[in-house]
Amino acid sequence: MARNVKKKSPEPQLCQPAEIFAALQMLEKERGIPVDYMVDRIKQALINAYRKDREDHREVPAENVEVELTEAVMSMVQQRTVVEEVENPASEISLDAARNTSPNAQPGDVIRIPVKVENFGRIAAQTARQVIIQGIREAEQGMVYDEFSSKEHEILTGVVTRVDPRSGAVSLRIGSGSEATEAFLAPGEQVKGEAYLEGMRLRVYVVEVRRSTKGPQVLI
Image (cartoon, rainbow, N blue to C red; front, side, top):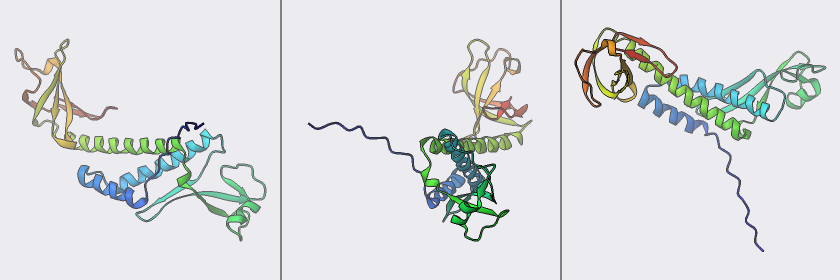
């Protein structure tokens, strides 16, 4: 009698270096986020993912981990100091074990041990992806802040996106594309007797631009 075998969900795979750089170059072209900035974020994401993967498997935490990421290479190494007797497994390696990698190793030497990036588990891959997405979001917010902070005390045009029925506060969308952001028109800043409707275009005066956890906040 045949049995139904439940297939396991495939493990997420990390892209090849050339694919990563092709995506980053497109990101830079379309959104203006520098490739070098995102490469640094990806490196840190891989390190964080590796450390979390070890924690999840209750292994010794990893210290002194480095990532090399170019269009041709994506590799990770851990630096460990060669010692006669290991006291800190996270940063030290015994002489015998070190000589398996580097035959001429001596106590006090610092050797670089390759880490297999492709062996990351599901949680590690998800962690890396989330940090990369966060890096993109932060870069976009930074560019929007720079764009609008230079326009303080200028008159801009916005489109009403929401009118709070209780307070009467108005939210507007200012700008276009990736450089657009939300602006807030408090009741005290509104023209008395003027009614606002969603979709209405307004000319507004930019009072101040603030940083917030949700992105730049433009006060008008």
